[in-house]
Length: 64
Ligand SMILES: [Zn+2]
Image 1 (tube, rainbow, N blue to C red):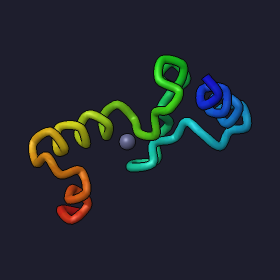
Image 2 (tube, rainbow, N blue to C red):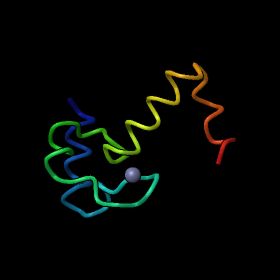
Image 3 (cartoon, rainbow, N blue to C red):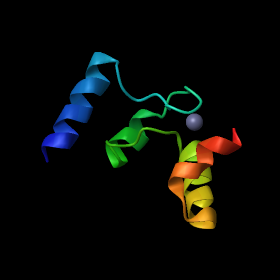
């Protein structure tokens, strides 16, 4: 579980835990539940829905 240790270390340093999409704080509870999360629950859900809908995760950025 090296990856989780790295993520928790970044949380402690303050370099981690913010959504890469909208920039809001993901939240400590979510980081503990899913230390590899890079997006807030809203952006994560939206991305998963788009990927599921299109079946092509690489195309979603073209819509923005
Ligand atoms: Zn977000």
